[in-house]
Image 1 (tube, rainbow over the protein chains, first blue to last red):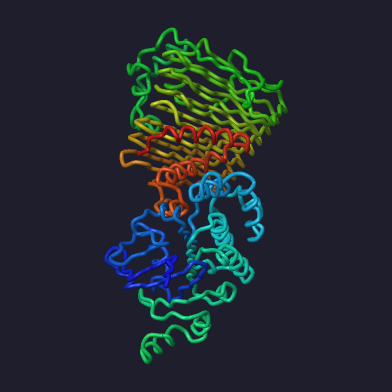
Image 2 (cartoon, rainbow over the protein chains, first blue to last red):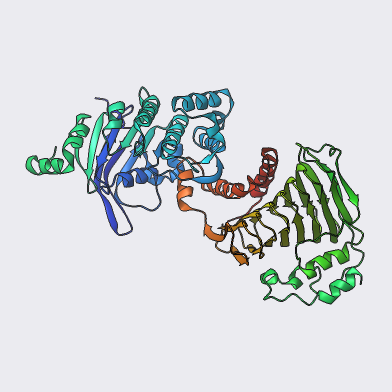
Amino acid sequence: MESKTPLLEIVNLHAGIEDNKILNGINIEIGPGEIHAIMGRNGSGKTTTANIIMGHPDFDIEEGKINLNGINLLELEPWERAKNGVFLSFQYPQAVPGLQVGNFLKKSVASIRGADAAKGVNFRGLLKDSMKELNMPSSFLSRYVNDGFSGGEKKRFEILQMMLLQPKLAILDETDSGLDIDGIKTVATGINSAIRGTDSGALIITHYSRILDHVKPDKIHVLIDGKIVATGDASLANDLEENGYDWLENKIKSEGEV
Amino acid sequence: MNTINKYIEVSELPHRADHLWRYTPWKKVHPTGKVKDVPKEVKGPKIRLLNLSGTESPPGIELIRGVGEDIRLPESDDVSTNFIKSISEDSKWILKTESKFNSNEPILIEIDAVDEINGIQLTLDIGDRCEFEIVTIIKGSTNWMGLLRTGRIGNGSNINDITVGLQERGTLLRVDAISLGRDAEFRTGTVSSGSERTKADLRYRMGEIGSNLRVIGSILSRDSMHLDHHIEIQHDAPQTFSRLSWNAACGGKSKTIGTGMLKVANGSKGADASQNFHNLLLSKDAEADGIPELEVLENEVVGCGHGIANGPIDENQLFYLHARGFSPMDAKSALIAAFLNSTLSKMGSMKVHDWLSKMLYSELKNMNAE
């Protein structure tokens, strides 16, 4: 039987920062075209997982592996991971006053997809269409990166970058936080249009089921104390929203692993 | 008393305790280091007036030989002012505009200094209700260049003035002593990435009601450059407004100094002033000082504040750009350019900004900030 290489494979990942251990053996496997979600309490290790996949230099990996299409990401620097198709939509995107959005997008697309992808009619067309889909005015391009952006503008700008960079793996760290109902729909549309029907995949980190109603993930993982304690289908998000994490912990105690 | 004697009389005056000379003593700026020396046969640099696009400047503005009218200028430093005067007797120019002179095309003054020692005096005689932008470039391979700018911005005029230091080597001594007329808006920018040593004493006086001043700096130092800018803003009338924003990126073994003096005279009711210095340190051997000082003698002011921030490139900004595929070198260059651009973009119109940005990026390419 032919075995298919997973898009993302995280195996027994143990990691932390300085002497503080955060992840205690995470296992996740995402196939091409799949969207997975991670839910969990504050401080459970969700953002740490996202940052480690992207290669944040502050974290120490004790054990485990992270492969993207069979490539060992842990051997790559963050910009090399980006060039290999990893994209992180940041929970708190950094402002860079003085760096114009238009120039930043061109440089980023050129770095990741090649110089030809960042010029000409095709680039301008993709930029225009993506901005229209996200309800972003063209004046956005002359502003400075995340400088003075509202919470919603920052999140939409992250999704715009995802649409232009066309990553193999998109990690969306609480991209729905701080967005109003229409904003969540807009962002969800952007995620679906970038991932569904492609060989790419996405890992959505969220506290709420609302965005998952629009994106409909293939799997949901629940992270507690740096470990995935439950994996289920989209209905798991609704159960958690109704009953809370205590319900899940009690259930695990009484039934063993879910 | 002629200018040489005037200079010799005051040449021993500057003391390191003096705010202006604390970080770059006069003998380090003087062409020979012997402060009593007044170099003979100093030639004036080549100077020409044109449009920024390279075409002929429009009617209504001209560069003529001579000295301007005697007006009340900001209190300026005797030593540097008299020294430049003593060596530039044959190189005195006036930039004169008619009243209501208006130009959409930015104007360029090009100063090309190629002799061993150069000195020039330039008087700004800007008429009332003028509106235009002027860029002054100082370039050339001179070993020592002195530029003294004095003058007045006419009532109700709105001027963007940018001085760009691109001297290939040596020392640049720059002195500004400029007064603003009633309701005049004067935006004066400094872009500096040339000369091994720069000492600038930039003073602006708002002696008439309603004048508005912005002093902006984008300073890039590299290798073993030593760039020292002193900016003094004098509020001498009610309802006057000033902002100082000074960004310096400092790499290699270079040193940048920014000292500010904000003086609000008694009677300057409703004055609104602030000064901010921001230094970006690009290497462990680079050094940057920012020293704002206030002297406020009027109680009824809108506000008088100052601030300073020094630091290396932000690690979170770096990671953000790395996550977007920027290599370490590209990310660093982009962040330095962004830092300098945040003041550069305030200096003038989009046309001037585009021109300055291209010039700055080309300077950044030459930078060895490792």
